[in-house]
Length: 318
Image (cartoon, rainbow, N blue to C red; front, side):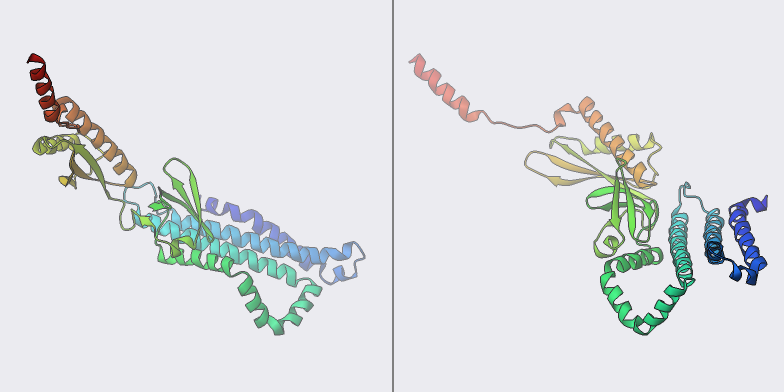
C-alpha cells in the first residue's frame, strides 16, 4: 500500500534505467556506427537527461503530496493549512522551473557546437548578464515577486480579498501571476508585482472570522429598543451568526432619515455575506409589519397654501 504513492515515479525511473543500461551496453562500439545510426548515442544521451528530468519532476509532485496530506483546506479554521499550501505550492513550482531549466541546459551542452559557443561566450558572461537583465527586468521582477509572496505571504490560498474594487478569493498563486475568483465566478488575473506595488484588502489575513455591517434608514419615530430586541431574536434563530458580535447603533441623523448601523460577526466571509443579507431582510420585514409609520417619508407643510385658500374663500363670501 505504501508503494502506491510512488507509482507515478516507477515509469520514468524504469525508462531512464533502460536508457542508461543501453548506453553502458553499447559503449565504445556505438562510436563506429555509420549514418544514420551514428546519431543514436547522442539521442540516447538526450533521452537519459529527459528521463532524469522526468523523475525529478515526479519526485517533486510526490513530496508535495506527502507534505500537504496532513492539512485540510475544508476545515473551518484552516489558516495554518492555507499558509502551508501557499508555501509548498510556490516552492514546488520554483523547483519544477529549476529542474526544467537545468535539464534544457544539459541537453544544449551535450551538443559540441553549443558547448564551444558557450566556452567562447564565458568571458563576456558579465556583459551578457547585464544586457539580459535590462531586457528581461519585468519578467525577472515578476518571478522574484512570486517568490517573495511565497515567503512573506501577504495573502494565502482561499483568502478573501478586495482588489480593483472586486471582492473574491485567492484561487491560484503562480510565480508570475495570481488568480482571484470573484464572487460571481469571474476570474481576475493579476501579475504578482501588483500585490507588492498597490494596496489591497485582505479580510482573512490573521483569521477567517469577519464582522459584517448592515445599514438601516428609518424615520425619527423608530423605536430603537424594539429594533435591538428584534435583532437579538433574528440572530438567535440563525446558524449563520457565530455568537460573538451583535451591535445596533445610531451612526447618523440627517434631515429626513436616521441611520442605524448593525454589526454582526460570522466564522468566514461567505457566511458573513449571507448573514448580512438575512439580517437586512428580516429587519425590513419587522419594520413593515410592526412600525410602518417609521419607514422613511417625505414631510410637506401646507400651512401657506391653507392661508391663501381661506383668504380666497372669505373674499368670495363678501
